[in-house]
Length: 103
Image (cartoon, rainbow, N blue to C red):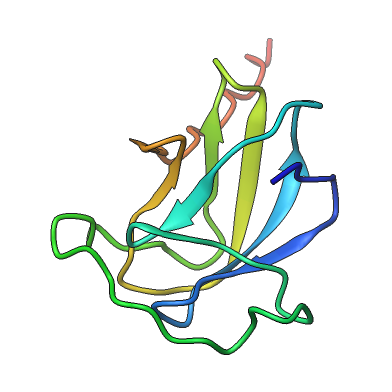
């Protein structure tokens, strides 16, 4: 799938949803719990798949997940027990930017 900025993606194995904040022009396999995430208004929406028990690290509400090597950043808008991943690699939570020092 070719993600686009502002696109909402929903998990087919749990309640997790994300918004694409930054993405490349490449095709990426964005998954949650081992199952491909889909457009919540698309024909695949609402289908329930089976989550991979090894990918149950959880997606946290309000956290940003980023893969700098792919140029991808996702914002979690609904939490779920599945692990967010891109091309089979789990996405880490993006760290906060340090504030500039005041004089």
